[in-house]
Length: 192
Image 1: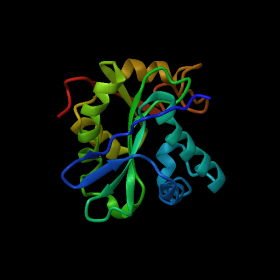
Image 2 (image 1 turned 120 degrees about the horizontal axis):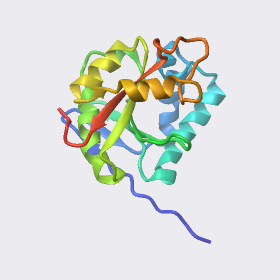
Image 3 (image 1 turned 180 degrees about the horizontal axis):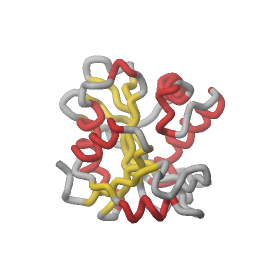
Image 4 (image 1 turned 60 degrees about the vertical axis):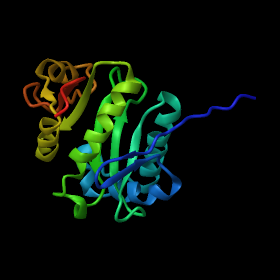
């Protein structure tokens, strides 16, 4: 019998601790994914689906060697403020830098930008690529601001490809010039 051993680092920023997902984090993730707050991440979902999605998030670490960190503040290490890191499910060609704040009380504090500025340099060392995407749903202006602050650039060609018939974000109910998801391109060395 063989065993898989993985090492998930703990990253720290000025105010945040970014660490491995744990069973105790399910409550925060499920509360987010079952709420309207998750609309820009294809939610809301029922609790059973949200729990299964958390298992997928945790499983990314085993399947890929990287994934989403759960972040807490140094002042309150028992409350997860959100998930930040690399999302790369099977069937998705390119890794995605992704972020979600789980509760409204954490908005407007700069946690997303701070967390991703800690994650992105680490991610480049493990991904072995020079570019990554962020998928920003139409209307998610807060995530557009974060992407820009991180040095990402809107990728109109990849957005068009992903929105066309057969693309990852194709939606027959939406005209091609009004994509559901906009793709932002991160390039190694461009982090602001």
